[in-house]
Length: 343
Image (cartoon, rainbow, N blue to C red):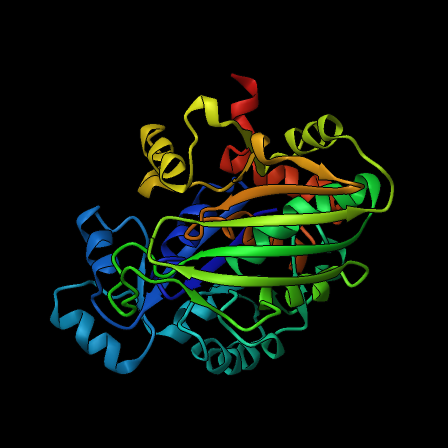
């Protein structure tokens, strides 16, 4: 079964969604839509326009064609040709686009910037895949929540997790962004962080709370997790569980993985496009026990981490696979996740 997919919004996430779909052997990318000749769209043209470009608005078509871009059609033309839309438009725009999806009878998957009310299911490929089966509208969790749930779900399925307390050391902006200006300053948000609340939405049996601190960096978030398992688990056993997860890479300080910048550099040295990493990293050196509680730290590569779970969402919405592990395994194979364990 090959399904047809479109992407609305060719920005930080949209361009990665397009590449992710293009790598799936059982999916076809029909095209991408945007409103203006942004740097991402200009780069697409300079690369030889590997994806068809559609205009998200009538005004956008004028702007794109004036800049010399070949436009394959209007937004509704793209939506009409697909089985499912991946909407990575700016927050609030996706909700407006949903009216077009409904009118044309198309399924859609939204990213974390939209309100939860836009979708029928708040989705994660590992934690609640079954709830997404056949759903018309799914919404992904944010980058931090996506990576956090991977780690918590991994423990929960093995030994059960009663509750977690998290601290998020959050990058303040993506590379290339100019709209936030923290310099030589940290900023604390009101607790609990939305990531903790969102985790409980997807995994209601786990109590969660958390604090978020904005930091003036651009490559990756770091989350410390204090998890209370339902049965005692040793550090070595927990480390072995994490090593078996295809979307969690266990790393060590003595290997040179000193922090977020080390991981970004390593991704570039691997030749990953844009320096992307689909997997989260978990520092084995931080995995310790306090009584029965487990504590550890993970790195969240914010630009690419939600791409695998979005591919899972396509599989769930269109019932490409009805089994959670079969679906995630197909996504992982096509994206090359877990390959480090073979070397």
